[in-house]
Length: 378
Image 1 (cartoon, rainbow, N blue to C red):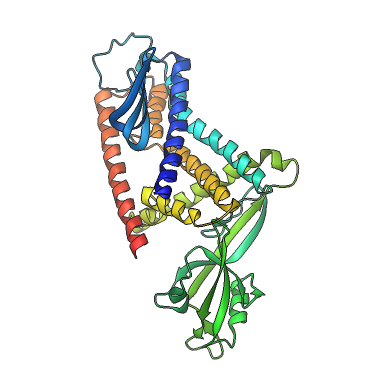
Image 2: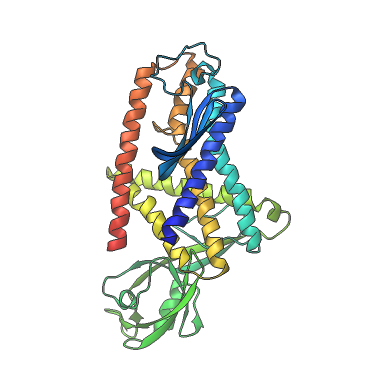
């Protein structure tokens, strides 16, 4: 119950930050805000202040800002109404659309700055997918992160988890795959003690694993894991610490774009959306991450929750930058076409494209949700 509550608080607050950006920009531009709502209707509570209804809705997912004239198909509104969204110049509409994205990025800057200041300006551990060098910060790499586990292997039986790093074997520190192999030499059939660290939360725990002989390699033992890398970033050197929040936001944003681009490229090459679906998590996946964080005790719990919240805010901003119909970026693309060509796309055509985009997004969310549930169950 606590996991769900914290998840909903994080999600609702990030949506509030995003929609607040649209709200403030619209008010500044003189556009009428008919409703500012948190959650999805039906309404639970509402109060009208001036010309705006402020509402809390029963379904605690998402939120919205309803602007006069935002519905491009609404033909009942007078086109010359100065408070009509569509009566504003294209550049003004573009600013209103991008304001939510801007707020998500600014919130990440501030939250990362606060989180890093609590942790000596060192980041939480970041799993690496492929080779990547971060632009800012001093890197410290961990090259013994579990990226795969063989079914029914000793590691599987002992409960070793994806995303844990092997820090020590029988009290001997290991820093590379080579050192892991060397430390396991001659231990086939014996119990070995692993010190493991969760790379997301930094929580450490010890597990006993029975090593087994490696097929075709006399004297070598294995525990049934595949190992990869993770990194922590240190922003402690002056003057970097004063800009640690923006620099870490840039690092995480650039890394996210790189991963997402690779997933999309793989999906196109293989003509299969599976790569994107595998690499992206939906609400169920995020809920599971929150659950894992809450298992950690002490300061690391707070740091990991702050880190997750800042990353989700960045991700929300990035997602809405994508020029896909129904997203802010998709609506912005239509404004840019109008700005360049001097002509508006017919409202009915634009509305149809956004509806199609929304249907695709909802279908993708369903697919990702089932994928996340399958991962948790299996």
